[in-house]
Image (cartoon, rainbow, N blue to C red):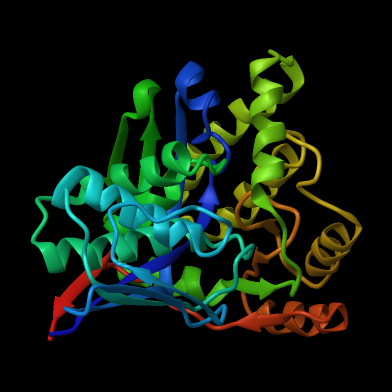
Length: 340
């Protein structure tokens, strides 16, 4: 028997940062994101030899031990160990024997929600194998708790829900970790135009998002007006983006992205740097009307809205920075698991 799963990575189009505690608890947050055809994959091979083998194929890391109820968190594949520990604690109450292999289409620090998407994919595989009673909200919330509570990894809430639900979603965040996912019914012609005009660019740099997010959270906790007001504007941007996409006012999306980028840079230090600013300016100078860094900031992927036929001029202008542009398509399905 082979159990497999996959979950899609996402583009955070608007509102990123408002899904992070304590802002979402104090003021409520809102984001708009869309999943793309880049994935995190998981495969589980049940075993009867009393061993646990965990392999991260893209990172070329391996961990093996005798089967036990709690795997020691020692800095090696802790994300995957943490998922197993929670599965045993909440559901099986007994040790399991298996081989788990994972792979992600984008590197860590890419800003596409890789770690959270991986957690969703692995949880989906365990749920398929063990027939766990996890609906979409249950799965996403459990993924969030494993990352943010069990493993104390700083971050927001949108990535787990994006990977679980899939598609284009307007998400609302409230205190006590309450989340409402509003799927948007967008005409295919609008999605085709958006994917054509939205250039995805890998800067070939990475960052530790937790450090940026911790600074962001500290600014909110210390009640610093400047940072709070900037985050309010990002929440407003999510509504602006929703209206533009649903109404088919696609060419306004560049302006909405530019509006958000101006405020995104203000919510914490480290979100941008000289390289990111230079890339952004080059894209705008070649015809893009707006863009942003994907995720918390500091590195990873960026994307730009390029109206008419300017995407090719923008792509050419970015070659000198050493990164690469990526073709992609928007997807409608979230986490999917199956058994062979």
